[in-house]
Image (spheres, rainbow, N blue to C red):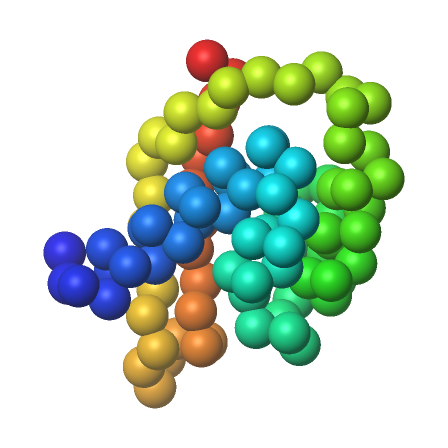
Length: 91
């Protein structure tokens, strides 16, 4: 795995940790200010995703998550700027 792919994997892990711990400044710093995100329950601007997470923090069942398989698409002629697909499951 390339150093860039390892860096992308570390960002995905940091994203989940910051979200689950309510570390909103860290969560906002992970994405580009104009970035967008698509997860199973939200699709849209990343800043709105973070605001939604803040509103719901503590309202939903909290659990520990394990990141299972993943694939990372890095920039190329055939790939958008960045894509990461990971599977997480409650521990």
